[in-house]
Length: 459
Ligand code: PFF
Image 1 (spheres, rainbow, N blue to C red):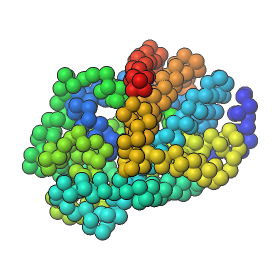
Image 2 (image 1 turned 30 degrees about the horizontal axis):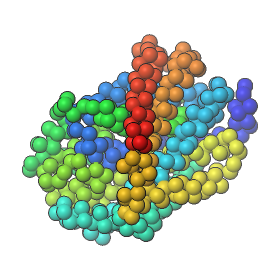
Image 3 (image 1 turned 180 degrees about the vertical axis):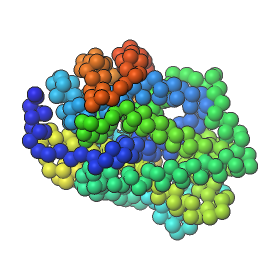
Image 4 (image 1 turned 120 degrees about the horizontal axis):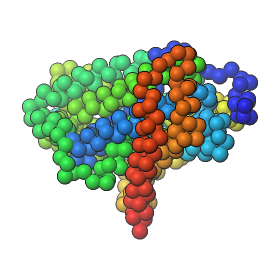
């Protein structure tokens, strides 16, 4: 037994209160701004249906096998990311470390958008979003994100909310919050999607979303689709390893490993239906980027009966979805300090949030005064953090996870862990084939291209 495992055994580790609690919390990590905000605008920026098609292919061939690999590794070792890799092969603990670093950069730009959501919740409450004209809504959005003081303040509030939940620990904090928020979000987004697709003029948007135009496929679209799979599933930075580590030994891993990606994808697709048909119906541009959700959806609400109520509910739920994701990022970092360094949970969480805020402020300013401050090629801080995490760090984490589970720990050992307590894994040969022979080369090729594009941007 390695030292790390021994150290961990000494203290009683927190665990999920129930299996459904785990599934909802893991789904809570997966479902977030990545689905509701990033997926629709990425579809808009990357050619519509072609992006959706590639996304689905990567989800099935790469996302699903990796999800099972991550949860199994966590459950086996009962350790957070760094310890999980390290307890099987000491030298590999750096992969967990990579995840901790990645968490900092994702939360840095994630909290910027989280802050926007809080502002929109308040604005919805006061009726300030009950406007049909997308031009006016665009003006409100643009005005807010470019004002440095208020956007940094709201970013701080988002981080403090994240901190408060994580401090409460696994079962009473993260689990309880997810159990209430996730089902409510699902119903809500479904209602909005129905309204959006029934707006006059929505059919063009539905076609844009669903019909692949193959001429739009290029390496950028492929890289972004894979990055979006990793980002949306919270795969590649140790969240699922860490969450799996709080599962007890008699839990069946197959159900969650399949249902989390299915739930996640359903929410992303529903968000696409909620946003893109409405974009076309109100005459907005699908390629208008990060503002898409904040401009289009209030316009949809304004055209609905009880629109104000829907608007409030929607932004509150988006905030919940964002929080169940941000707490998972913070948890990866916190669990490292708690499990590996023996730091007290509250102290670790406060310290980390402070550093995250410092790293995050430049991302926030990139939407305003620092918009044209390019730190790499034409990327400002916000875009740089996004590209760095989605296209490089998460992708590297996913690649290393597949090599580790497929080859270093060994797919057969992982299957043994999955089949514990009499579980029958009928697709084991297929999973083994994918995790050993398909995922590593496919992700590697795309990662090389991501590096190439970063280097090209530098010179
Ligand atoms: N999956 C989250 C979302 O779609 O919003 C974002 C995220 C959470 C990415 C946790 C990575 C992560 F580790």
